[in-house]
Image (tube, rainbow, N blue to C red):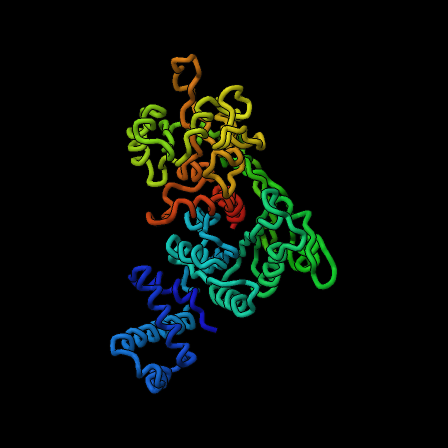
Length: 468
């Protein structure tokens, strides 16, 4: 099997090449493999040079292909000798369904070493490797036997003693379709098999609350996921299952999650969910110190923009100095105007005059959690993947009363969706998280809407570390 996704990752991690050069290198290797199926032997290049199709190429192209083949051989050999057991830290983690690594944002800081990670989607895996260059990312489908075996082999070699698994939840989520036979619901089976093979001391599985009430087909019988975990792992592990709300752990966001913590029998310390914090962190605590920021209105000219939001440019400049991710969201005029007339914690559907309308002027019909401002004095509502729209659920900044216009109408500030920087604050992502500057904002927004707040993960892992 040609491991092209991980070849691309390896080039990203180990060679100072541009994305274009990396793509061209992978393409040239694929071309060589098409002329002569690749095998890991010094004779490969010699035999390739005897192929008529290769000989018919220009000198330049042959040189490029030869370099690509050499790099692929270097990549394969590096994988075979790569042993990470030299790390002094004995708390070594395998991260399954790692995405771009939101969950593990604090783990290195508190002494946990994520040595191996797996992610299906190449774009996410590449970004993960840029954020966590010391972690060996294996890009591929965990249901593929060869990918699974590679994850197990490298985890055992690296001395993994903790598995953290955050399988996709869209098949169970209340904002998903909740299809009974969604194949993503069965990915817990790969987690179970990984636990059996690697035999870690501790396991954490995180998902949506419906994880505990979802049945999956195993063999020819349906079984609840919690019952499957007990059936397959209960003999060797003490298993604790609970539903938590991250707002109880100093995260300024209400986000309910199903948490499974497993402890291999015979360990001195049993892994438990930590006690709730005494203090609840609100939106005001998280982003209340940020100055006002106006949206960019896409369907008006500059003159009208400044009539609607007179301080747009000065506020945008100030925001840019705070963070590269604190930039004005883009919205259309009719949505901005209705939100300017909507107080904190309210929905524009309650406005008698400035009611949400479509482009043709007809009233919008929608749920009351859309066109809705957040509250200042509570944690934020759950961040979703579709977090950039005024018309989606609970996405609008709380705002403050800014002035009374000439018609006697109250005008409220920040008539926009939350910025990516504000979402990061609400998700408890540290300011020091090293996301590359050229990362797509839209991509990051969707990823954050899928993640678990890393501050909660930090507290769970700290609970494991307390008595070690």
